[in-house]
Image 1 (cartoon, one colour):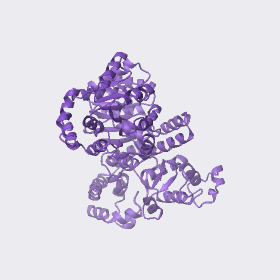
Image 2 (cartoon, one colour):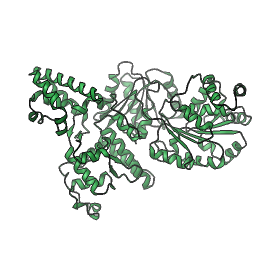
Image 3 (spheres, one colour):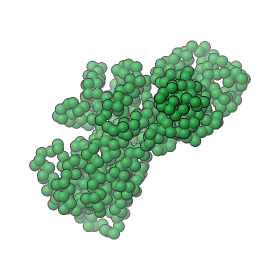
Image 4 (cartoon, one colour):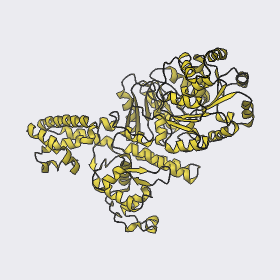
Length: 616
């Protein structure tokens, strides 16, 4: 096959890399055009520059280095963290007629030797291997005698200790720029926030790299979070709602024991489920993975040991029955779903016990205080996502540095939460943050709000601040949730790269000045109960009140669509129920309705009062 590719290469104009890349794209891969972001990445490598590419799962990252590999000729070394990932890519390339192979621990020594001989003879275009095998002195010396034209590092977030899947052996890849100074390096990942990207750029490239961030949005995945009460019943309920053919799915558990327990539970309830965790034998794991790739309506119950090397396009759902470790890890894990672009679901169960467990994991980790501090900050960002009453997709994308409109495809957009006016409490917290110089994290600010005379508070004389003790009416968990919601709502930012300081945003400044109102969910860990109560309240409406409630909902939807916002931004169901009961006809009476603050009184009183008067 190498000779066929060589013949094609000879037929191209070597001075016209554009013609060559399009020919490879069409003739080898069968595509008429590049997807968004691919061509820019290909051009960077063809021009001999280093590349750090962050692209969402399913965006075609592999093509970004495979096309340059075939256009440039010679040998491209691909670094991959998992045998399964290597095997899948090598198999796909071979089916496309590309001379590709891998050296890894899953093969016999004889097979690995045979692959190496083909590479040394110039018969391979791409050679895959793990970092620990590549970065031995013997292998580096041997590769130095070959015509290596490109290095590609897949799952590059493994390089950074701030990434969701840090592997220490990846760090040694920084030596590539010293051993092969003239060979461009491509680092590709779907999961890297700004801190992780900066860490990769510095460690691997010493800053000499073109960074391309294509985007993180996966709009086909519906996002939802549910308060954990009885996780077994909740999980069975989720699957039952999907109907008799649940589709292929992944359920992530925190422990091996829970993985086995959950798989057994699903089988007892008629679901085709298999476990996957590091405590199983290699043969068992491989058998279950093969079944998952081949069968329909099979659910894999797994720890995070499963997933990085899985490229199954028709995974219809990912469920976390335990809290993941960070938003990066969560994004990476839900990225297994819906790679075919069809609708998929990402559902997470979340409870206070999960928070305690994750905190303990971080504190018990054999790592320095700097890493522990940042891991706590990353966990805080995930908790802000789980606590949020606003559009979840906006929060998720904001964490990765992107802005988005309300998505209409998450639980908070589709089923608005009951919100309360927390403007005064929020303004008090913002005052404490400003008065302390925006240099402290949430724990210290909460101590101030609660009036706690801690050693730290007294040492810096923050017990003398006007906000000291102003929040004593709330409990500590309530303040933790409220501040997370201020973060998720965009009123505050957390300095993840620094010491976790809370920083007031422009929106937060408007809130502090009384120009905005802050609506929050007071009991964020009882969302399910709140839903039941809301339904119960609606059932108590009289027939006449219920008809008005229906008309109010219709008006709310019209206003929301006209403004391009989800319904909850206008009013929650609880507010409309109270409005239907009270049937106010004056602005003064309208101001007494649950959830109507000063801003909403000014903004929405007239259209709702008009409808109520017409319905009387």
